[in-house]
Length: 178
Image (cartoon, rainbow, N blue to C red):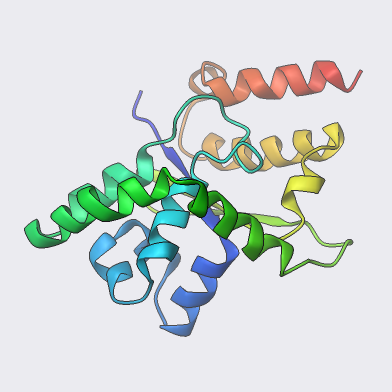
């Protein structure tokens, strides 16, 4: 089964892309982002893929890094490997993410995420402020996973989706809500 990889997109990345009249798919293109974002933004975006507060999937998510590695030129690859990746491992990247979300609180009656289809191999979730609190409620977690599964059902057979780790997370969450 061909996989579709999850990319977590912090709201500020979406804002920058919109301001530049670029589609969200360009978040997968390191060369495009390099002219729009600071190294701190890039490293925080990369770190965001594995933040415990925002990712419900277990294990490391390397889909964004893989996509960036495929899309960058030789000289950009050096910068990615020698600067952005190491910066994403530092505590400053985590602090940058927390500060960005604390400074921008969302309305309590809105869903603090949006599931989007990026390309054949990637789907994304734009994460808005308030998501970390939202996902703590089991019924909200179930709704979030259902939104992700809904997109996956468009691409894969039911039995293929049921073999994915996210489906197992869904079953666990459903069991917890009983």
